[in-house]
Amino acid sequence: MSSLFPLIVLLGIFYLLIILPQQRQAKKHKEMTNALKNGDKVVTSGGVLGEVVKADENDEFIKVEINKGVTIRIERSAIARKVDEDKAAASGGFFAAETK
Image 1 (cartoon, rainbow, N blue to C red):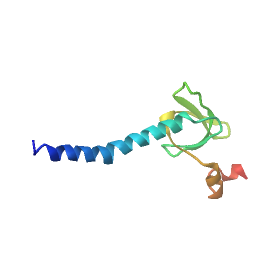
Image 2 (image 1 turned 180 degrees about the vertical axis):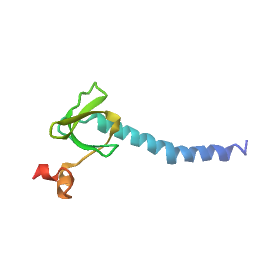
Image 3 (image 1 turned 90 degrees about the vertical axis):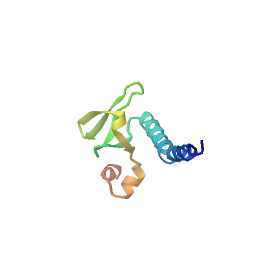
Image 4 (image 1 turned 135 degrees about the vertical axis):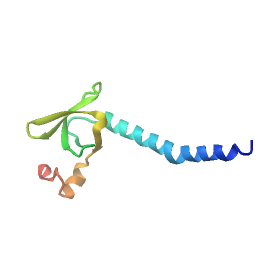
């Protein structure tokens, strides 16, 4: 019994340091992708920058305009992050020309 106790403690520490934070991050990412709406600026996991032009709540795919007249259809899980327009404009980023 005493040799089992360190193993249980080690598994508890492993859960707290690795599994729990990853679950929280996955939940936060899913909430962000589900909250996407038309006009949001996004970056895909492949590094493609664009603007959401069609995001239905029921559909697992969204349409993103990456250039004028060029739209791509991508899976919601492929969205890496939503771009904050104020920060992008201030840093001279991709969307800076559009906001001026």
